[in-house]
Length: 79
Image (cartoon, rainbow, N blue to C red; front, side, top):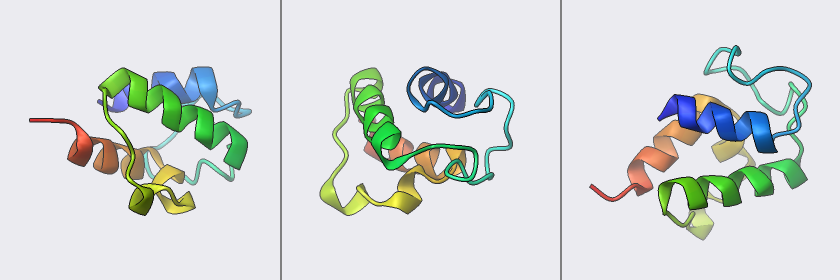
């Protein structure tokens, strides 16, 4: 799952570093992720995993790290 999330970050995150090579706990906003790009990441994740982020998860901390994204996506993906 983290590889899929990282590929989406590479294609939609518009960060100055390669998301495939960063530590999963590093702050993505410090690496150049913007709030606008995080919306694009969210939409791509929803498409990729056939999920919908609830309003309670639409906060900066959800998109701050690969670990946080994986935790939220993992919780939302149907079993």
